[in-house]
Image (cartoon, rainbow, N blue to C red; front, side, top):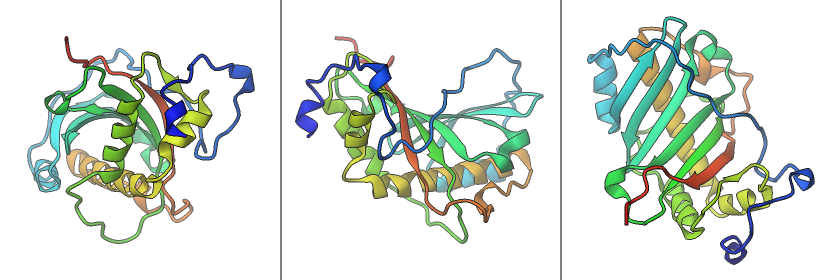
Amino acid sequence: MLERISNISLDTDFKKSKKGRYSQFKGELYSHSSFDVNDSISFSSASKYLSKAGWLLKEFKQTTGDKVIVEFNYNSYCFEVSLDLERINNIETVIYSIHKDETFISIAKPILASFKISIGGFDGDYPMQKELRGLDHLFQRFETLELNNELNLYNYELIDTLLEGFYTSLQSDFTYLNIVLFNFLEKQTNRKFNVLFNKNRDVTTKINILKVKPSPYAIEN
């Protein structure tokens, strides 16, 4: 089935789109608003925690309105997340923008992907991960597409196919990313969030690919 992905046109008739097997929730990407930010970063328990997790914090911005932008590198990937701390205990999903760290790019057309990840219920300790096997497999599959155009939710059949075979591994990866992200935010902001321990949540972390497109970090030929 993957063979037809690389040859199919992405100019899909939007009117024929329907909900796919894995497309369980939809929404727009966070738009980078122009706001003043506070670039101060605490290098105490928060930095020690990230060091233990193996994450490299690239940027942390917080506005007076309690919106934060977190950028970090981990396991050869660059991640960006935007959150509203005022409503963090009530949010149900996190938007991750992910691309390969430029150091690890080995193809002419690297990929930038955006994911909408549900925050599953969680109770207990979660071990530190040294690998993101599901994400590795998925980005290898992305790279075989040789995309020239954006792939998005309207291309639901392709999206479903891309997730086949290692959905469970991806769930483990994003569950881990969510846990470390929120634990870091607690330590960084000196506030307690209950978002991970909401008993009303589905215990399953659901994954939705919002967009896949050629990365702006492409290698110059």
